[in-house]
Amino acid sequence: MIEQRLQLLREVLRERNLDAMIVSQPENRRYLSGFTGSAGVLVVSQERALLITDFRYFEQVKHQAPACELVEITSSTRDALAAQIAALGVQRVGFESHVISVETFEQWKQVIDGVEWVATSDLVEDLRQVKDASEIETITEAVRIADEAMAHIMEWIRPGMTEREIAWELEVSMRTRGAEALSFTTIVASGPNAAMPHAVTSDRVVQVGDPLVIDMGALYQGYCSDLTRSFCVGEASDEYKAVWDVVLKAQLAAEGQIRAGMSGVEADAIARDIIYAAGYEGKFGHGLGHGVGLAIHEQPRASQLFTGAIPAGSILTIEPGIYLPGWGGVRIEDMAVVWEDGCQVLTQVPKVPVIPGK
Ligand code: ZN
Ligand code: ZN
Image (cartoon, rainbow, N blue to C red; front, side, top):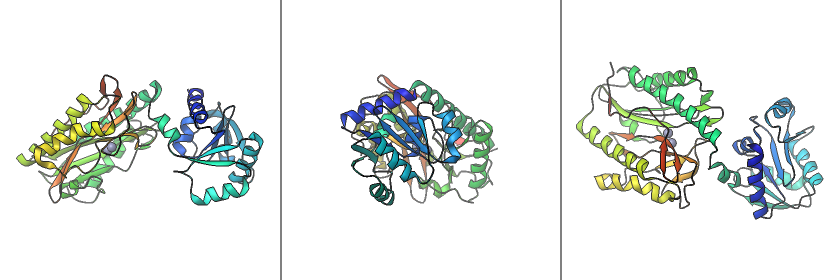
């Protein structure tokens, strides 16, 4: 698996006429080596893959990254990197310009002589878009953990609880179901807070009839899940149900029509057109979806800005929303694998506009 990924990167390096690539972005480093540690630099050339890291990770690299040669840092990362680049005798060296700070790059330039630096962006991220079978299996498990926690919380919520209490119960539920961490800080937004797509969970007390937006995800073996459900507690107004129905209709249309090869713009438009046609133009102020994998937000995107094609085997969230300031909001989010013949929706937890709350 790792060997295959390294070969794919090597093909990209050949196409770009790069002799070597320095990979320092943590998820990219993990993807190409298997190494989960928090520090280290991976250098990939046509013949070799060197993982340069410090004492804390020597043993870990031997276990996790058998496809890479361990380079032990004795003084500093940049000195070790300089020695390895010199030993490889490479000319054109790519680096991740979207990751490396200006300061780090200046330091590298000072100690590493005789190379032509080539700024690259998203080379490994582009490879990560297409998931292999084992990645899909792991992500499916991350989705299952989030699904079960959400199903539990939909039974468990009572009026009088605070957003924070609900978020904590979700966190505990995901952990006890096998999550190694959260894939991001859980959002529990109630009442008017639900009008903010990325609301911060507060001490607000949830009342009967309040709209809730809950957005959460589990991290499992390094892979993320992402799930949103929206519902009212105890009872829902007709206006709420009407907004909720539009969001669900938009989401089901997108899940029914998105397929590989479609551009991100086309995919986004499926849901956006339905929401705008229902009179909510300007109330769906974010993209329809994003890739999910080792990172919670990655390529591809279903958005008005992503003109590229959504590749087969990518994982995409489908999460239309309507947000009405002062009133609240509705977002419904599933995760799907996108194939040539359509979406394979992974998320299983039911979608309902009202939960009992008793
Ligand atoms: Zn989400
Ligand atoms: Zn999302």
